Amino acid sequence: MKILIVDDEKLLVKGIKFNFEQDGYKVETAYDGEEAVKLARDKTIDLIILDLMLPKIDGLEVCRIVRDFSNVPIIMLTAKADDMDKIMGLEYGADDYLTKPFNILELKARVKAIIRRSSNTETEKDNTIVKLGNVSIDYNLRKATIEGKTVELTSKEFDLMDLFVSNPGKVYSRESLLDIIWGYDYPGDIRTVDVHVRRLREKIEPDPAKPTYILTKWGVGYYFKED
Image (cartoon, rainbow, N blue to C red; front, side, top):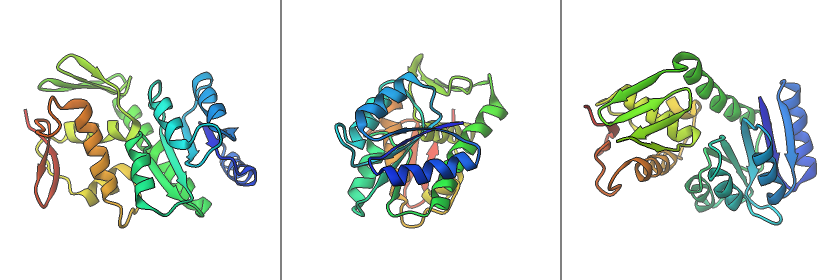
């Protein structure tokens, strides 16, 4: 697995790089947004750890640009405690976020959770296409097709889609989705689920304001319409 670490704090990058290399990961580093985009384009990267505040191009714009050509998982780092910064990172396509200062063990746990979820999906359902009505999921390409149209999904969006389509009609609370998809305790941040569900609806629903695939059971959670 190759991780790209993007931050202008060189000592922080050095520390993160050392810790992940000790665990057997290959690590690329970048200290500004332009370099990050170039590395994400030119190299095979399995996950990006991306700081919000960067020289040349900020982290949100890097995230937006990368999402134009890649669904690589992105963990956003932010020194700001403002929830809006976190939610904006998710809106731009980040899969997760962590507020500085953070414990390196927590960062490792989040990286492992994202990689484990992706690896389990690929191992269990590799080369499989699952169909439900007008929706199909290609586990080899990690893409969804809605009424014949291919939809590009981020890692977390794909995982949500996989869970919903594999269990049509089953209602999942926000808390259970955090536990299943994110794979670790995420207290106080259930809006993370709402943001990802909204982004997913914007990609697959003819009218996201009146969803026909991913439905809401008020006061309970979300579920996928049974065929």
